[in-house]
Length: 204
Ligand code: SAM
Image 1 (cartoon, protein in one colour):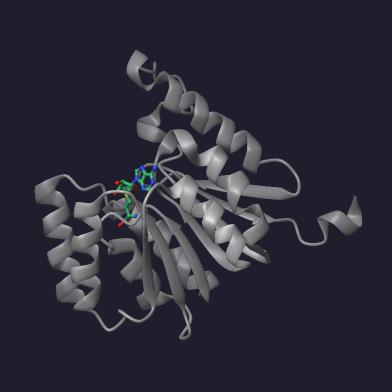
Image 2 (image 1 turned 180 degrees about the vertical axis):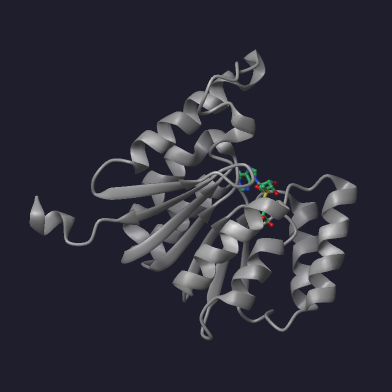
């Protein structure tokens, strides 16, 4: 498995595929190992690298549903996954994530872990769409929320990134309000770890 993951890391580096970067990976793994999820919904498969990390470090009965738009990446992800011991644990859904989230809602499935890692301008929309599919104790992880340092602090945002940065700020605002609480891990490009405040509805 280490060999396969190493091969994927090299492919990603050579071909500029944005898999979770080395610094972000440590924080990502820390959360995954702590939660040990059973049912994962991943938005943004790329070549299947983080899907395999989930499979490796999640619960023994883990099942992962992962959404990806690019046909080329789906084919590559499937071929890597087929070479692992987890081919029966990971299901790739092809197509636009927002549309597939609506399809998934209809199935009545629930997830105890969601990893948001696709179109950065869509995180708020994804967060709304996953709501009916979350278990009470679900953890929602979103990558790149500090986007190159532009989202927080004084680094001026280049014009071409202004909309993305505005939308990521909206996402952070949304997940920082009850019934949610969010911790932002600054490693890598910024990981937002969101949890529901337990019994919030009973307290309110
Ligand atoms: N989670 C992966 C990992 O760490 O190994 C990396 C995912 S990469 C940052 C984001 C992926 O989201 C890209 O492969 C891109 O093609 C995909 N993507 C972008 N927009 C999408 C959309 N609207 N629907 C589905 N996938 C999308």
